[in-house]
Image (cartoon, rainbow, N blue to C red; front, side, top):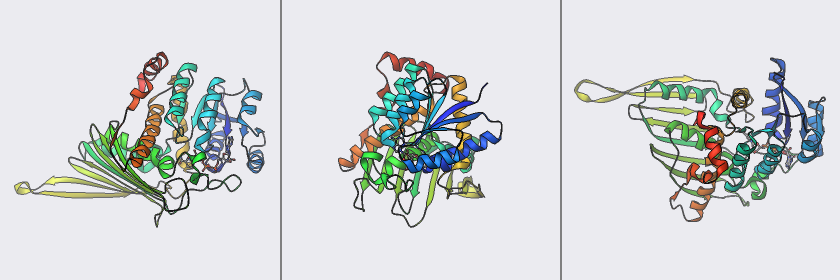
Length: 373
Ligand SMILES: NC(=O)c1ccc[n+]([C@@H]2O[C@H](COP(=O)([O-])OP(=O)(O)OC[C@H]3O[C@@H](n4cnc5c(N)ncnc54)[C@H](O)[C@@H]3O)[C@@H](O)[C@H]2O)c1
């Protein structure tokens, strides 16, 4: 099999430090990926891309890249601001390319739906960068839940603290996360996906309702503080995301009927209930540290585990698998959370994956993704 030939669209922070660094590691370990072209609207970023990838052809516009490179590509990797994800993905899909796309999949439900539908129609993989699933400490949580030691999970809490909004590269609107026209929203748009797909996994189902609040302290049109409650068929999740924190940290708790797991960055604590003499309940605690490089916001050490799954989806022809469906649900949750916040936090129902259905194309999607659902 020839190496997968990829084009990088948006050569900013996460592409350079997270994805491209991962591709370089792959090139050194077997060479299953070849980066043949790069597009970025910023001249400075194009110069950085050309210096780092002298063998790649560099373009100022993704359409010019797709036109010139027709027939020489297998996939595009998109890491532009969210406002551009759908346009780039739809153009790439129309050229018959697989798409790896940073989160959030898109800035609106309509755009996300169009991306999933077109992936099915052209029979090419659409895969979101849900990289937190690949953090070593999250893999540990997965195996602890799977071991059954905490019993059946019915409550999760997810807190993400940041002392500032993440900044893009200085060469191109470094504060784009504070401009709705590029970001589509604030910290919920930026971090909601990671929060929601972890909750789906830990609670083993998809939510049916959400209530949310947003606050903006700075002079911006995107929120910097977000809290929400999600109702699932299997339990509840509550989340708090903030760019106003005094520390950079994730703090997750997962509660079952026999115990709980707490994650604080690399630290994992397992609490298991024990019934003592006379029926009194006590807990035993086990603690471990799983090095996961949380302070490195490029999360480069998680990239290749995720890219392996993208490759597997291509090999299995899972054009719209579970990850893509969940990325659609994440966008739906974010949009519905904003609607709830506008209504003072009233709980709003979620249509879920049914929002994709109702036409011939999405019926095919369901069949194509059946293996992974
Ligand atoms: N999964 C993660 O852990 C993670 C972490 C950081 C960022 N991200 C995501 O990656 C994406 C990029 O974020 P970033 O922090 O790297 O931003 P960034 O500003 O550093 O990079 C964006 C790049 O896109 C370029 N660009 C803008 N519009 C373009 C267009 N139309 N065509 C081509 N290039 C264009 C800019 O010049 C810039 O170089 C966002 O979707 C963000 O949510 C994900």
